[in-house]
Amino acid sequence: MTRTWLLPSHLVEAARTGALDGAEGRRPRRTARDWVVDTCLFLLAAFVGLLAAETSAKYNSEAVALADQIAGGLACVALWLRRRWPVGLAVTLSVVGVVAPTAGGALLASLFSVAVRRPFRQVAWIGLLGIAGSTVQVFVRPDPETGVPLGIGLGAVLILLVTAWGMLVRSRRRLVEALRDRALRAEAEAELRAQQAQRAAREAIAREMHDVLAHRLTLLSVHAGALEFRPDAPPEQIARAAGVIRDSAHEALQDLREIIGVLRSPGEGAEDRPQPTLATLDTLVAEVREAGMKVVLDSTVTDPDTVPAATGRTVYRIAQEALTNARKHAPGAEVTLTLRGRPGDGLTVDVRNPAPAGPVPHVPGSGQGLIGLAERATLAGGRLRHGPAPDGGFALHAWLPWPA
Image (cartoon, rainbow, N blue to C red; front, side, top):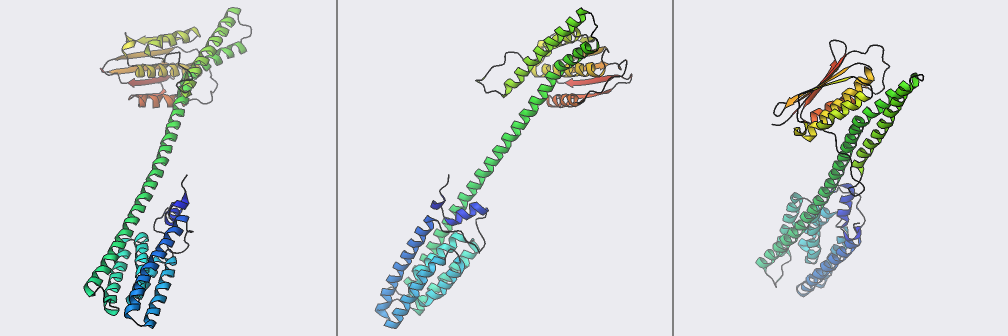
């Protein structure tokens, strides 16, 4: 945590409002560092004023020396207002310094304050005003010990050095402020990227969970419905349906564990089951057939292991979702799954089913899986389209790249 009492009040206010060049008006309270700096500048200006007053007492009357001391004291006291009115104070002291050499130290401090807090254009004309005032002072209140040329040069050099120092401090403060803003923006962008990555991961997990569990849960629903509406079915059919329900529930739990494993840390658990590929498509078709669905598989891909794993997994998910939709919306219809392709030409997946024989109840949430499939195919570099077939059934066509 930053210790604000070690920072200038100007930077503390900039961090609060976001503006380095604040407008005149309400000023922030001085920090402990500000009190130390202001006290040191006051003592330094008073020391310079005392040296000038001693010189003035040597070559001027007592009245003039007293007036110089009073003017120098008031100028040093006025330095406590330099944070509120830096420009006005610098202009006033430049004019007072023409007739009162004891205000020279306070003038340098006020010019430094202007250079720290104001842009170059204001600093330039105020600095020129200060140089002009110090030049005129050499002729109005000459110092016999230094002479005119040395007095003019010394005054100009001191003003330029103090102004340059203040501008350097200002540049450093602006750099610190810019780095702080950049760090805050980088932190905000990193947090946004993390949120986007988290959202993308959640969406990927949701899509994967839908693709995996919809197939299993549809089997459960179909066979549970059969048991509900056919309580008088032969014991063999009831046992078969119960076995499918048991196996589907077991597979659903295994798939769910596999998906949730993505959310675990590397050391919390490992995935025991491999991801589906094109080589496991036969297993999927056999499982569906065992559940009582009529499926015709027509594939010209003789060696599924040569298909890239990501492409094979996408084909598997497309076939799985298409068979699940056919089972829900066209129960009892024969589904034809056609797979064509070779390296360099890509893989083509066609799934067709005729219209259902009778009325089919509406299934809530229909169509979400097809949207996910289209997105999955697009991300894989392919394309997917689906819709009603001319014979009243439903057709799905997908193409996926298969590099040579």
